[in-house]
Length: 104
Ligand code: SF4
Ligand code: SF4
Image (cartoon, rainbow, N blue to C red):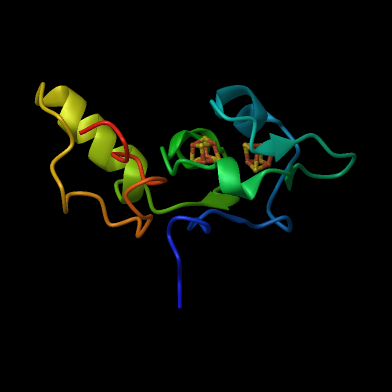
């Protein structure tokens, strides 16, 4: 079963990658690492599914389902000026490790 706390929806299609390295520049968590022929996903667990890499890749070599999980729940709460509501995040982390854990 997919565990969105420890896994992400991030997929790199290396066969499409032209090694422009835009994804390494826009990713706020240094998930991608530069490579000789293509980039690689070096730190998949650090991906917060923000979607910046997918949006900036010129050849659709990156796919990610942005708008789900911890990051989206936290951004939504911040935009509304409220604390993270319980049940809003679907990441599946427990109360001590999830995005809202320990802050209530
Ligand atoms: S932005 Fe796309 S084409 Fe450019 S290095 Fe990253 S995955 Fe490859
Ligand atoms: S979705 Fe955001 S955090 Fe994840 S790899 Fe892409 S740019 Fe980095």
